[in-house]
Length: 163
Image 1 (cartoon, rainbow, N blue to C red):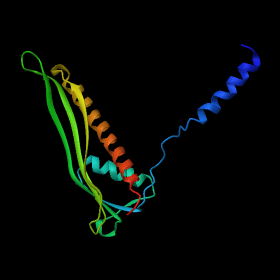
Image 2: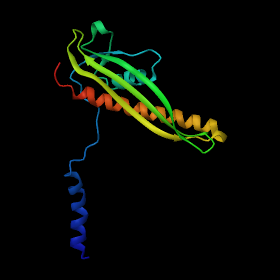
Image 3: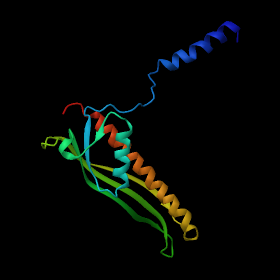
Image 4: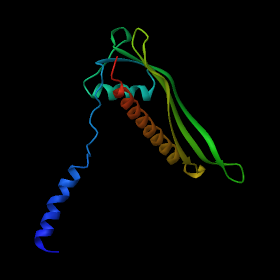
């Protein structure tokens, strides 16, 4: 390849990549400044959601009487279902699920997001000789699913444009 052509291609590559529209996902932009989250105090998903919203700095988590919008947590449920057995009837595979049902409304009752369910599921193999490591893997999978649900919920909350 001749030197001028090589130089041109080296200079054109960054220009082409910048024109493709790629942009890192930034912090969500919410149309409200305060939110009340009706989740149980012991809910790890509810606590992660509160932390995610508060970490942006633009929205405060307040009691219902002072908030512009209210996120009602209708269901926050973890499930573990057997999906595979071996020939002798021993468990070989589980399916882990997190079901999160919510709705978003104003304090006076106007529904902004109707009752919606977010579901995450992961398959995990099971081996009775490695129970402790499988338990740790299960906890990691639950944490990963929980983070995915919080991110989905944050995107849905950011999509609300009118109150």
